[in-house]
Length: 142
Image (cartoon, rainbow, N blue to C red):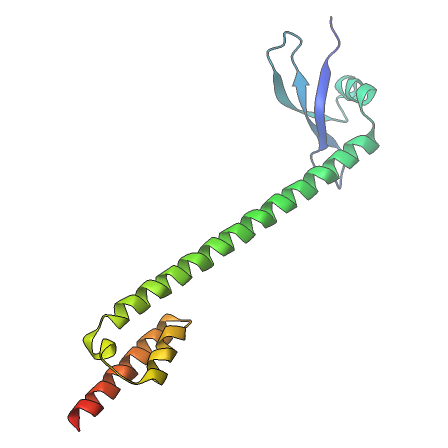
C-alpha cells in the first residue's frame, strides 16, 4: 500500500486545533480531494504530521486568514467605490434633467444655479430646482 500524501493543511478551527482541512493527493495523478483529518484518526493524523508540523499548519492558517481579510476588505472597498461612482453619476444625470427645465434654463440667478450645480444630494437638487422656478415666477410676475 502506498503512503498517502497531503497538501495545503489548515486548521479547521484555529482555536481548538482538533481538525485539519487539507487536500489528499491522489497517487494516480488525477488531482486531489478535500479531506478533514481529526486528531482521533491517529493513523491519518500521523501521516499528516510526518509531512507537516503543527507550527507549519498554524503559520499557513494565519496566512490564509490574513489573505481572506485582505481580499474581503478589497472587495468591500471596491463595492463602496462603485456605489459612490453610481451615486455621483445619478446625481449628475438628475442635474442635467433639472437644467433642461425651461424655468431653470432661462433663469439669470447665478447664485441659485451655482448651488444647483454643486448639489451633493437629490434633496438639494430638488430644493434648488424649486427655488429657481419660484425665482423665475417672481421675476416674471414683476
